[in-house]
Figure 1 (cartoon, rainbow, N blue to C red):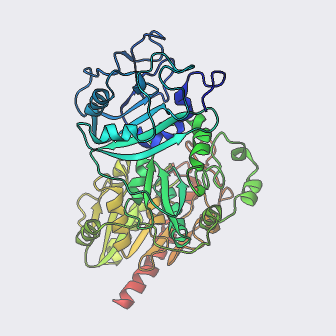
Figure 2: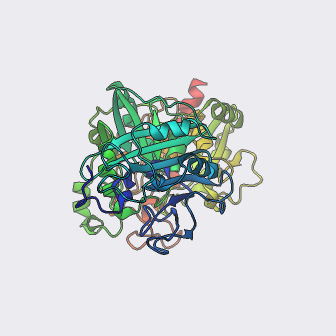
Figure 3: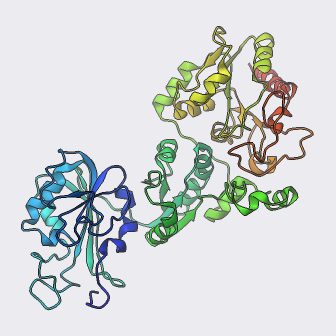
Length: 501
């Protein structure tokens, strides 16, 4: 509760780590005073008490004429609304600038916990007392429709306030009942797909599952039937140095907290600059030999069980079927997240496949940078160049519908790890077979020969710690998986396909 000794200023610090879910993008902090809650907020203040302070713009809280209608993603104010002459007019002005679907986040003194107007200790500039439910009533009669997302009276520690979040343009929110779990995973496509194996197990245990991730993660997982909700964070929305404090607050909001960030990279794959990146090679092999899937399940405290990891929607399934031929379809993922994840033998293997497998069509997939690897095949109808032309979801849907998927340690291979109808050829680079491919179904994991540094259990952002072949420029692990090894693996799948045709 409030006391004159302990409740002095910087109120937004008390609830800042509850805000990120609702404050993505471009938005306003009204009455920011001497500091903004987060750097990306546009700070507004009238300057009466602190001058410029942390404000980006000086203006009155009830006059946002500098901003067009529906021009911001959110408005946040802490201990401001009680100072306004007209609560209704102020809320309408704040609502005016928020886009449909955006959020209004309010933190105001509770009349149950703070002296009322005119009482001893009350701020003499306060013009209104707010009890629980009062602001919700104001929003219900405002010029805009609102859905109340959060509403709580907070009186623990030195708090004495109401915290209200409303989403513009939506109806009544239905709060989930029962147990709740939050799975935290930031990372690339493959990381998200590895995390997906725990969602069905958590649902079996009766949890409402929220995934805290980035927009990239949500893109991959958006149609997963075992995910109930997403908590999306933009890049650096919460500064890295504050993530620990942010997670500590969020953890209290769920019954179960599954922290998978850096569960593989940083733990079982050493990051440059970290102490384990410089460990002796033998020590890394000893310490980082766990299977990624088993380790992920252990962190979630669920049993490991192979399951579908990517869920395309019906339009993506149909698009994949139309794109693929009626013959032997090969989806070849050209590269991974760094230079050691590509093969220098792409062209000779493709040439031999075309000569000796007349039913084969090869679909080359990757990002925009992979277009350079596709050069030379422009005139060949049975080599379909798709790098940078289709989305990652379209790529993963094609992989699920193909006969064979080839590639290095990438999200494309992860997406079909446990898909029984698809054969896989996985070219190992920095992980061991036990790390990644132990539970892959119908998979030939190709291991580089005569490569003392394999597996290095390291992430590489440069070639400082990675040996390269002088002639091809490829990483030694990629160079030492020969064209013959790749082609022989393709032949095995092709013969099996023909025998069943």
